[in-house]
Length: 368
Image (tube, rainbow, N blue to C red; front, side):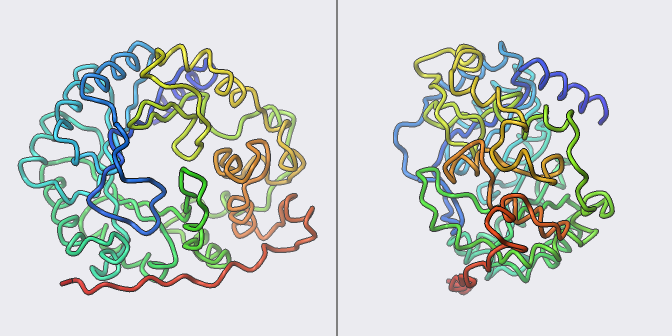
């Protein structure tokens, strides 16, 4: 693991795009209530175009490749794309809901030596999971897929997005993952729609609930270090950067648009019209993102949390300023430590504003 961390830092320092997230489609067989994507097909890249992009990524030094969507298996050519990626020796992670994975698909994924399969699962209760995905019986099919993949020796991770609809189910979902013998991750981040629509943010859990999440040692290891009061930032902290977006990582949409990150919808170029490496090295927008140090951040540069905050520049960008604070991350920092952020203090707040009332979704019957 230390070797991979060292390689990642070297890539960051040299500006090498060591990791790329490629969405091969936005089409999906689920309609998750919190999803930030438009699922209509507006002219996604062809098989030949995606293979060409993969060739360009290999030439650029990309090592880690995440293939996602939408639902990747909605593309009939997905295995052809995956086979090409493995011929280029990418370490491949696949994000899927698992609904279209059976024994044959699991066997093929194993034969291609895929590194990790991340599967979305939102609850241990079928009625809650199916209400979030809006696809009847999706829980049953997803759990079945996890068992197929596990039995074929694949490394599986359950990814659970925490929101108002499944707030009470995190422990049950974690236990289900343990019973299935797979890794479990929990993320309380709800992302705005890529077109800027913020209505989905009403699904964010009340901030005060984050305190219990961050102090659960089963979900957040190294409690003493993670939740400790922040220390004043050093000069080295202020010379640092907030995340790997645009430095060693980027995102490519099914239409060829290149962004610093999937949560950072700043257009930097399109691989249908430009070579990937030309975009990575020459895009003014990418260069701007790459140039911003912690000391350049408005408000955040004076914050005691600056060296420990999970600040997402993409979420800040969607709030209006990529150099500004991200309200959601300010809230996380407060509930981790109990110490107000500079952004809060500027607004005269000793704690975050009260979160909007819980938004409930109607639980569809599992047999619907």
